[in-house]
Image 1 (cartoon, rainbow, N blue to C red):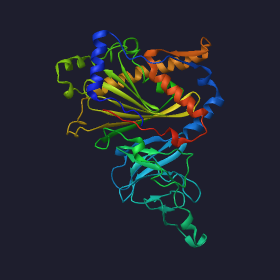
Image 2: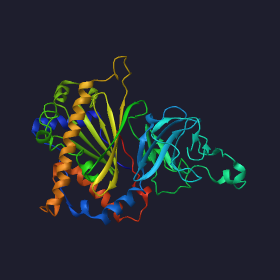
Image 3: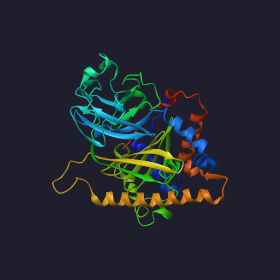
Image 4: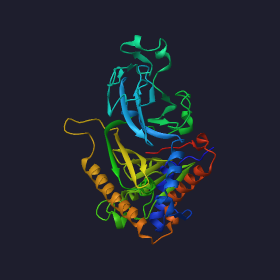
Length: 390
């Protein structure tokens, strides 16, 4: 059985020990060849592998009511998820079965899925509801032209797809939800916003920037550093996934609290990397789910879903605006550093990038990616359990 992440009390105890001893979690160092960020053949191999692996498509909170839908590209493949009348979330290839045009765009709600090109319409379960001038087509065309569904599951607040290059003949139960069990569900969260941006940065660099706290003082001097420690983290692994805890300085107050009552929420930011390309970050009143899609060797799309459990208020969204502003400013600083790394690849100074023992979550990511590339393509063997703590 794959090891689960530690409890809040256990992590807080590890943090307090690090504070007392001026230490941090240490693992194995990792040397990553610079060519792995610049070689086009390597990028194509990565993209092919990612299309075979289970991955997060969207939070369940993005499609709450029957008819709600959300369209986006996953690993370059146009897909959409919608909530059926039976309450199930289904993921389909976003292509009409007549001429291939996209069926939906963006996010919305519709009780029938209608292609704007020729008006073919589909029920929420993907079956054909109406073909205009149907007498011009073979008699049984509706029986064989339903929307193409991807194998997917809804696991405690996240919609997981089996992979765009997986077996389209699989049903929506083609992935076992227990394999992606989340201990603290996101199912009670509501969606605040969804944003999409493109950056001229390799997708792996964007993953890396979230998985180490070695840069807190130098890169976030006036944002995170006043409230967080530099180079003090708890790093955990669960199969191919990892979690890094970034404690706030106020966590020291918990030294006098009964260990059983200690908690991470409000005293840390936790960053969970759901392999291969999703980052779940928790803040006191917000949870961010960021999906990083490779577009090219030096270009990525970041889709970020902002979630909260706070009730909406008449004068705002119901959560602390100053905390959101701080997180946004810190994200800009991270992006600036990643742009600098991307630029540095062209300088020719390094054959390898070295990640220290205090950055072991990054080495864990690269090791698992290498294993996927070297494997026989059995994506189900990589669908390992994960416990997402908040």
